[in-house]
Length: 197
Image 1 (spheres, rainbow, N blue to C red):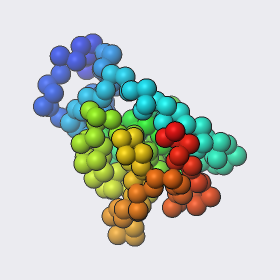
Image 2: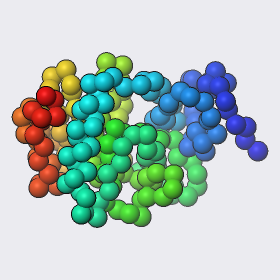
Image 3: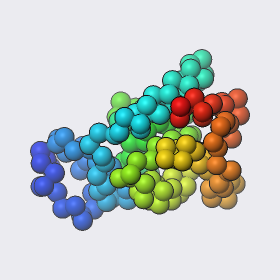
């Protein structure tokens, strides 16, 4: 039987962990697992981050209110098995908590969150998480088949959109600074001046 972990200091921060391990962690610090490695999350996002998150969530939530896709806010566990992995073996090494994710396949949803790639993920950059979001998560989301990925850069008042092509590689779109239209949901248009204002 595995042991409940109540203090982050009980973990080997250089170790490799699975989602099964993650479920036993009962401490206040927020973590994500990316390919088995622990990534600490900011204890509390900034006011700017939360303001942008709220405005995006409101706009996107209203758009999807009569749609079969569902919108979720962090903290919400997204478990990402390796490509072609049978997730029923319990050896999932990646669990992330995107700021916003949109999931259209209801079969991916369960009481623990989402198992498999959301259709769209939105991450809002903060000074402490920029490298993780731009490097590790970009590669991860591309490999796992997230169809569209938005990186929101508050310092630049811009959104960088990446869309998965037929070869499974992200293609970057022109940075959006006034209006943003989703590639996979073309009727979803967001006034960024309002979001960043």
